[in-house]
Image: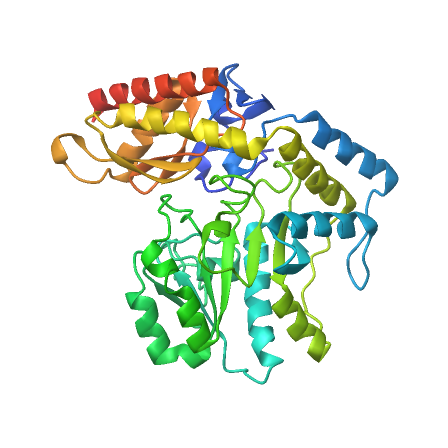
Length: 418
């Protein structure tokens, strides 16, 4: 009988499966232990999830209690008190004057799928069934389920997987020119504009040139604005939600990473009072359901995470960590492989190029750089010709110092190989 490594690892070819140096064993605080016995500093917050550190006892205790009190309760055609309490807490932190209800999902990808159904139904029940187009940004990342894969503006083999993009459009994030042209041509068919405050691919912030036009364009063309804050929510960019700093409030807000401090498969869509009222007037049911969404343990984790962020003063601490990270990036700016940095708060990217002005790093060269940084002690995230840095909001000075050393040492070692 053939023995085969039993786990199909995601976003990796089979030739890379089962590497002990990449197989996590446990995690604590801001560090992860791997199967080769080495601890590494996590500079990705566990794929942006673990904003307040691994192993938070209060969050774990809340989940444990909920599993004893109500191991599972559904949200199909009914509610439960855990979900009501978590919904109210989320509305309160997002802004109760603007947001009215919460819809639970199980991932950022699934939440984006559900959002695309919701915005189309929002207009269908108001006698505008032609509004079916959903507009995203070029270079954006919204997920890899079929709907979110279509909405994703990065080229990730959509054609190969027969992803239907016929009702999706993409525009540039650097100014409003392409959006204006699209609306002039198809504005009466557009249901929503979906934007990440910072593009998940490459950590590029959405430009003020685009943001500054949104209120005018929404009034003129009548589409909904959706903030996909899967990656930027829960203090990642300096405020609880990055869209708080937009000149216009979104009609829908999606959150996932950071929502439970990475402890549960969870996402939410917050709906504005105006969106809620449209469904109430029609008494319209949203035909969407996920069996595992909004389970008591998930809702307990959300409540505990929000409470812990308050107790730890996580937003203020994130500002302090941001200032220190700014200094680290400034010190790296003279390195031959570094051409600058982008991002906001603790969602950053170090831009890299080949030595002597050789242009963008090809992917194999980028992996060489990231592997050397990892060997030097820190795990960072790959992006287009960049190393993405997404540290926890609760980094201490020793974490910053270790990250700075690993980045410098890793870049130096990579330079010798390129």
